[in-house]
Length: 367
Ligand SMILES: Cc1ncc(COP(=O)(O)O)c(C=O)c1O
Image (tube, rainbow, N blue to C red; front, side, top):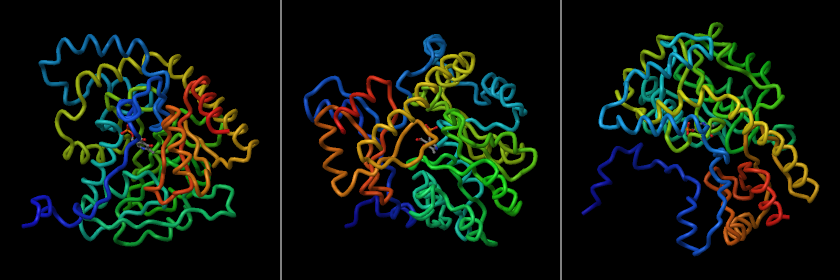
């Protein structure tokens, strides 16, 4: 007899699951060591604002009640900050949830969705789960200054009459690569209005002077554009899961139809709303990440480790043929980084920028 799981639909049975970073507790159990640092999931080493923690603690008292399914308070605040209307915002259980909602609402068997080789792993999973066909476009070649990045011209050529969505991460994870704003806008302008452009800005806050876009400013010009943002990175709230999509109201209406009524918890809603009120906390964390991005890259390059240019809070390193061994050596020293062989990058490792002390510890172990 086959296992009951084999009764699942074909496109789900053949899905390669998302591989998360190794949790600290797991390594503690395996090695029996303490003082582990995790530089594996692009989290913010400073965590959330104390104001967000306080608001979440207060929200716990009411956790016997369902959350506000419309996320009224958070949407009002976000709308004011972003210069959009609340009916343009769809809240998600992390931006991952919002990305999945987009796939559910706009894809089905017979349709295609275009994404780049080495793009964030959630896109092909979300596409395939709907039964639509994912069209993976080769990344920019080694001779390009943005090697491993999205080849927007080739992605444009991959769009046809079956295409419903094109996914762009700018910057991308796990590569850190980006397209500059002018180039990206020219691409979006060239995409037919019958195709949704899903622009993932999970690392929006970490631009640090690089010429990246604010996709929300383009929404009026491109009604087929959907911008995704998250509280998981710069806002330090990865554990409570809040992200959102900003779009034309008619797209938000569709996303809300497939959204679970209570997809964002009351604790998460309270934490995110309070986090928005503490921009100083966000700015401080971002300024450390941006400064460390330059410092750590330079030290690695100086010692002969090739670093892919990054506009995120992480670096992709070319670790060479023994990348797996180097990952395991780091683990034994209590440092968790991220292998990216699931992205078919077996010679690379991704390292999240931590505090200065954490990065120094990584550098001592690496160099
Ligand atoms: C490019 C990108 N998009 C989306 C996400 C999803 O983040 P979350 O669901 O925590 O908002 C991540 C997380 O690593 C990411 O790197």
